[in-house]
Amino acid sequence: MSELSNNLRALRPLWTGLPVVVLTTGLSLTAAWQYLRYATPMYESTAKIKLADQNEGVLNTTLLKNLDAFSGDNRTSAEVELVRSPLLLGRALDRLDFDLSTYRVGKLRTSELYRASPVRAAINVRNPKWAEEPFDLRVDAYGEIRLTAPSGELAEGKLGQTLHLTGADVRVVSNDSLLRARPDLGVADHYRLVPHDRARLLEAVASRLDVMSTDRFVPVLRISYQSPVPQKAADLVNALSTVYLEDYLATKYKVVNSASDFIGEQLKTVRQTLAHSEDTVQQYRDRKRIVNIKQETDTDLHKVAELKMQRANLQMSLAAANDLYRYMTDGKRSALELAPNFEAFNDTLSTDIIKKIKDLQAERHDLLLRFTP
Image (cartoon, rainbow, N blue to C red; front, side, top):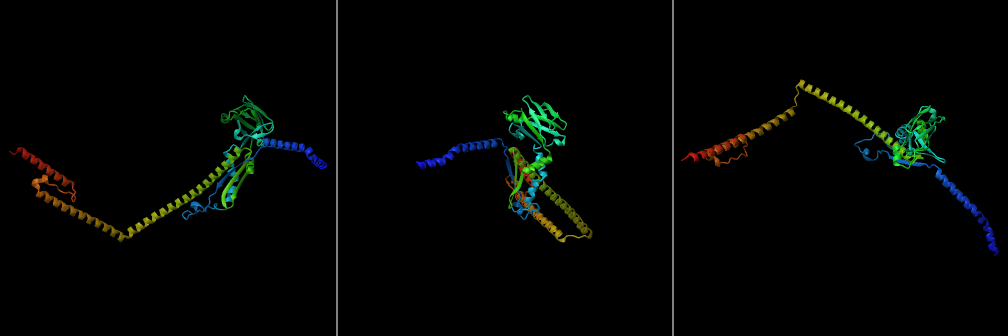
């Protein structure tokens, strides 16, 4: 009994501290759940681009030699810096709506809307100090808007009107296409508009952009971008990949067109040189009365052969005509019963004469039958 009492006495601190442990665990889980609920997550979008490898495909054949100085293993690191360059980033941003950020202001959290904003705003900032500064916008259920500038200047109006401030012009309209697709969204809310300076925007985008090669032996670029808005991350990666590919193709086309123009000019020069050389040689032959004996002999022999063939044909035709004449002369009294053969002697005039003779013989025979008593 004393041993059981000792064991219970040893476990008494555990039983007395168990509610504290349970309470602490519950509070920690509640705090973690609230943090995850109101914290802004970061989304990452990734695109991969395979670079041209000179060791694969048609470029490795002997027919087409690849003289591109940027192809090969050394090109990957250069392409990484090219993708991160402000030039390509600026072209990608020209295709996106990143110059103005729209936020919904809540009691506990402010979230960026991007394309999910029920309103669209266009800000023409004339005061450089107002760049990267927030414009407070409130829209009520009747379409009335109230805009507060970074300096505290207040402007009021309606949706669709242009509000004129001392340092900027602002026009706010409703996003009708989104409202038709999602009727549950309401326009009336508290918004925050932040116009971005292009230089600072490029720095902000570059800080969240990661461009690297997947492997030193595999020419593949990996482009990743992080943003609190998943659609924004995907749009930037897709736009940057598209701009990079278009720039690559434009460079290739420029090189090919330059090479094609150069080859065309060289061919034109060679053609003119050859034509001038042929004229010079012909003039020299005419002046010196040079004749190509072999060529002239071959031409004459060919003409002689043709004349011999014509003579043989004429002799065959003459013999056939004589045979036809004797055949018709021997049977002139019974011409209707004759059937001359024109296989060896094919002459249209002779055929017509034979037909005419037969017609006359037939007519004579009819007349004799009619008038002979």
